[in-house]
Image 1: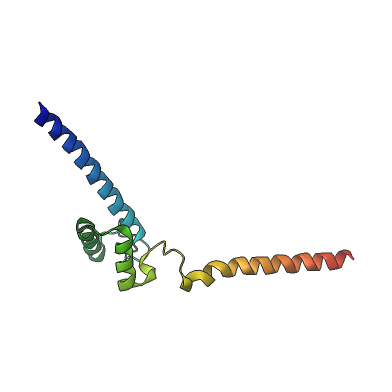
Image 2: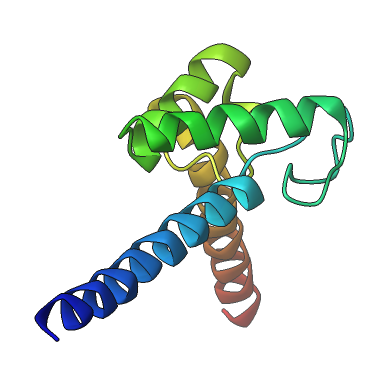
Length: 119
């Protein structure tokens, strides 16, 4: 009876680990751009490149690498363009801040011009 309970617990725990690993794979697949298709993630694509990259990511996850290490490897190999959500880094800081700065300057100028017309 103890062996049966142990086997059931083991199967439940292993299925949870398997589903968590599959969820992580799918999350990574959806965030990686297919170079061949260019508008699709490798999750959606069936190109040879996407299939090979899926195998590579699965192998890296099986070898114990985490999500960050996989993204770092892919970005070092293909550049920031490979990731749909590249995140914030020093090189892209201007792209994130420039619209905010332009909006603030434009708002300030409109406010100043509007105050001059009232006087």
